[in-house]
Length: 251
Image (tube, rainbow, N blue to C red):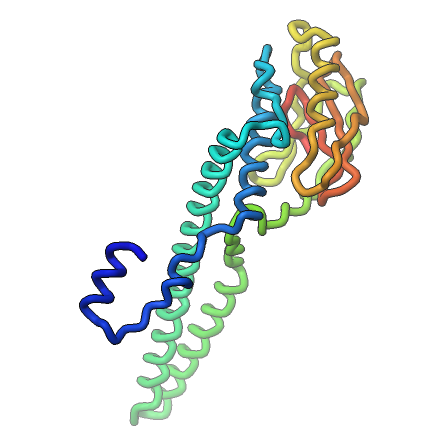
């Protein structure tokens, strides 16, 4: 029990405090392990984009020392904690907006029920109904954000519909999805400074890294050093195919 809880217990002895419930860990061991793996996967993905990554940068999670694993676990927990707090604040804001809308509708209804002329009563009743319709339409048109206790519990979003998934080497460029959901064509990257042998080795290393939760490494589908295209396949997972162009995800 923390000092603050002990002090509260002294001031109010009759207040029962469930010490075991208060001291429960914020994340389970399985959640911390999964968060640490995600941090390590992100680090390896970044390291493979560097011209000459150090060997220790590419060590997989299973071969890391325990002290370095604990560092990645704490980083993942801090990120998950921030996401959880942002979702909580956003949820409270939406609930407050709904409460204000309901209070406004009740106020107009109360005014409509007061003794007035028949014409004025019908006008207020119509205004009340219009307000309720507007509130319901607003709540349906603006989806509430998903509240995820941790990044692990949030499934990946399904890919948006776009151009064909195949990459044509004869084309002048490749498709890239923009933030507004539209697509644009970009030219192929300059591969003259990236040796083909090095790119082939890097692509193999990226594809064979075990994806979190699958329990098995992936394999290479396509290696195109001339256009810096690397396509990987994982038999398990929500999105089995990963496409990289100059180490930028394009799927």
